[in-house]
Amino acid sequence: MHKSGKKSLGAPELIAIALGGMVGGGIFTILGISVAMVGAYTPIAILLGGLIAAMAAYSYVKLGVYYKDEGATYSFVKKTYPRSSFAASLIGWWVIFGYISTIALYAYTFSSYAISGFSFADNEWVRKAVAGLVIAVFALVNVWSVKGMGKLEDLMVYSKLVILIVVSAVLAGAGETSLPELIRSEDPIRPVDILIIAAITFVAYEGFQLVINAVNEMENPGKNIPRAIYSALAIAVMLYVVIAIGALMAIPTEDLIENQEYALAAGAEDILGPLGSGLVVLGALLATSSAISGTLFGASRQMAVVAGDGYLPAVFAKRRHGIPVFAILAMSGLAFCLVLAGSLRVILEFGSVTFLLVSFLMAYANFSIRKKTNSSMVITAAALVGLATGTVLILYYEAVTQPEQLVFIGVLYALLTFGSWAFSKATGHS
Image (spheres, rainbow, N blue to C red):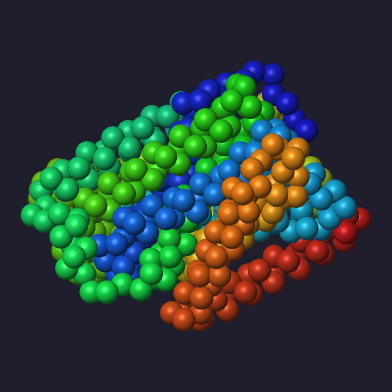
């Protein structure tokens, strides 16, 4: 395992990395989907999604403090079940591909907002070129310096939080109604629909586990891992709820459903004019930028660990000054390939299912060694039930509304499973 000499990441940088991974493109796309299904109950669904994320985070924190391994998800399974090397390899492949798909989504969302005010805003190739450019920029930032990346992440994350909170608060203040009134005017909502949205919302919280990938660069992991993850989750939940309430109170429901990704910008422009729209766009650009950087930072280190164990090409394990340069470049290149291929929405759905499944497996691993990690049996068992329920609900939603996406997701899992098996067999680790 690699150990760097200088611990350059403190609690503020680690919280920023977690928030950078969470507050990306997710909230901008999930808001419209949520309102379309559950209307004014959206903030409640978002809170429940945060509860599911907290259940997942509990096991990640316990395993992260116990093992202190930057391989995170992959290493936790490998060390908890040392005789199941293929299972560890498979999870490593799943998680890495999930991260690559989210990097592609964030870059695509960044480019959509970045060119939204220009005449060529609808040009697909310009959008993809800008997405490729922003991926390249943050690949270079991550290759350049750990400390430089951490400080830049601080600036982007905390700036976007201030912008999004201010805009959402102004929207809420400008609304002519209240949330209770909106809820009372709603048609009856099935509780299962709220739970489905809570499960879909989980993808907006994905990213907190990136903190563990930085264990070799952080000060006092036993203290900073739980502090960073729980603090970031609490901030993200509050931010998402404020955004949802502000949007519901100020923007007509039909506009939220129709515009989805651009609803906040459109609503802010109606109330605050071009300045308001510009602030939302700036917040979106900062959100997606920090998500790209934070995800690339953490996921590349996990990729290096998997490669170091022989389950990916060995070149991805090589480091320069402690930085996994080739893993960073490989993930960036694959993310750009996904951008070029399009169909990012279906890849996003794959990512949400993947992180729910993997979080369930982390809870199961923690339950297996709960005495060693000093974990509560009740909390861990509740996490297993909650995460399993969320996984079933999102698969049910896909089967009912978009069965072709479910087939595509199944094919992706089959390909990744075969690739992982073939590679581990070829290298003698099957």
